Image (cartoon, rainbow, N blue to C red; front, side, top):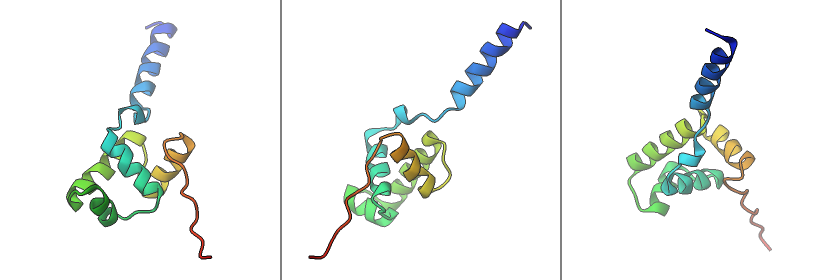
Length: 93
């Protein structure tokens, strides 16, 4: 195999393992934004009007597509890639 063919193959493998946030469904994007707000799965379920297990599935899909393993990593990923913004802090006046 030539160096060029090896390089091409390596690039194809690298591209296939990159996060695929462009493939997030609109509902997964909603879930990600709610994660950024600090919502629990139960709160997300209530907000979206779906079951808890459905939310767990969405969260798992978001993790896989973003290439992360935790809610914290998902939030950081969303913020770094402009998929969500940090909500304004509430003040008691």
